Length: 358
Image (cartoon, rainbow, N blue to C red; front, side):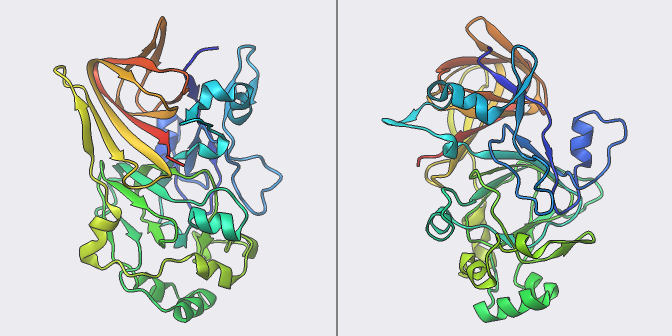
């Protein structure tokens, strides 16, 4: 089997509309928005879709040498040491694998919040929360001012928020936030506990802890009403309110709190550059880097990573194995591959998503 594992589209049903740009990436004849606005890349996580439990969604499948598809999660278990490696003297597990998604929004997403790792472990008995990061890739031409909401700029009291949730007073909830303008290339980190919502018309790469946990405190979008058991992670409203970080993020502190600025790790005479978009100083949950390739770019890494080609095309060489890479393609590079080389004559940009320091 080849070292590099490529992934095909793995679209997942969600409670909002989008996906037209993903249809375009997949070269569908009539791209359109639908209830499949996300593509879960190399996912080892099952989607939590109430009412669709009979449908297996979320887990990525990969072809084997005999042509039969196998769950990527099961493939990793066959040689976990090679694929996932170690952190220090501790073997990495499936819980260390970040969940990476393409997300394409046609409408604003629900107001929501995700539990921290500590909350998930102590209150839900689960290993991971859902701190997440956004790398903005494109915005739709028809959306003149794309935006996100992140953190309460004007936080309500706990009792006030409870009342607004119970009565679905969305205008009062929305008034707690300011719009944060976004553009392609922007990077944001949304820690667990911070309420947020993604605006319409945004294609992004979303990187997060490997879970599908969410407190959705807006119950209806695009005519779809979220079932009660899917609103608060199958918990009561008091437990859901415990998830929230109510501390204020004034407008003048929004950038410092959520926006991340690339840091150049190395560059060479050919113009190849490796940047760290999110690192250990930002979160222990995952690391995100961007490789900008111009010519040959030799690399050494000790950890596994997911790669997503966001611009251009080229190749990835491991010894005699050469993998062609085109824009929007995604792949997995095992921890057992310590040396590799990118090459591009026309320029290529790759987002690399690594495990955190757990």
